[in-house]
Image (cartoon, rainbow, N blue to C red; front, side):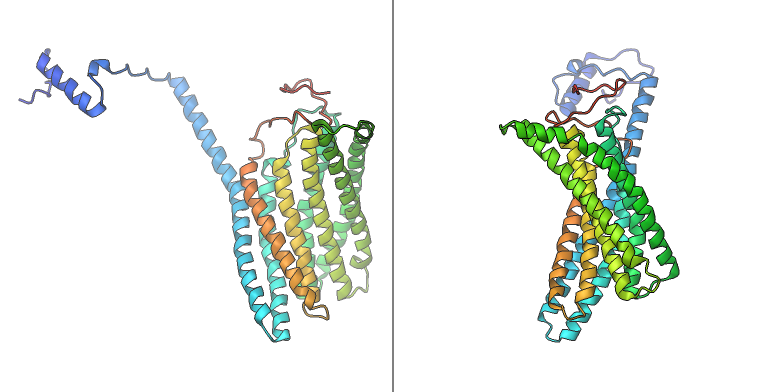
Length: 398
């Protein structure tokens, strides 16, 4: 009988059998003896086991949700743009070697139209990811009366506006440049959108100026002190970001006001419609640049991290800039300024490439909306926020 087999009805085990079991365990486990094995840990209580499993399951669900709502769309948009840029570069290379001017112009005009089709697919993916991510999440540690809260509200309002604006602007631009005709519906949508934008953004601009007034004493204090230590440099960066934000927002509001001249003419022609589309695209670029700059200012001024917003909205600004450059391509490639066409084409490819890279980077910097928690604060913030009394933080504020 095999000495390692112990019968169920046996109440004795020989010492030789025990030695052979020890030898087998030593061979299999690399230990000296079964008696030297560490004791097995006790099983978790049933309640704790269920809690651990539920937490692990919840973490998996959050990761899957982040992938579906944020990372996946950003990866998809970035890959789509990168693949198209490679194709466009080859097409431009073919145009450069093309001797027939008419054929070259036709190819570049087709490329401009194709770029707008690409943007019509890509930007909704970006907006879907942004609006489900921490880019649209306000830090709740500042008090309601804090300037940091006002600044965050400005950012969120601008992001709301930029989501509304895209479908109207791209629809109008494609009709004016690609279809070369405007339906009554798109005219009405553009008019309602412009009027609504001016009304909505006027209050946002006042909000921004209110927050900027808070920075004036900071600038005066910097001018009074002649040193150049790290704290002064941060305050300078804060003031510069605010100044750029206000400049972009004011310019954008002015552009929108001026666009009414071309957009709402009763007897407007194709030239008027195309000018309206170009102005709207430029205004959208300015809005998104303002959001990106303000996101950077949140860190420098108040110590709150808005890095996800900065990356995603900078990418959005690049795509809006690419839209504007594609309109310039359509305007110049078939006319007297055909030599400028290629420069606009390379401008489009440059901004598209940069936007693709930023979208890819944002997948590492963003998190799912409502799941990120509070980020670390900037200890060198120029004007630390006033803290809510019911929220704890590791950094004292004034």
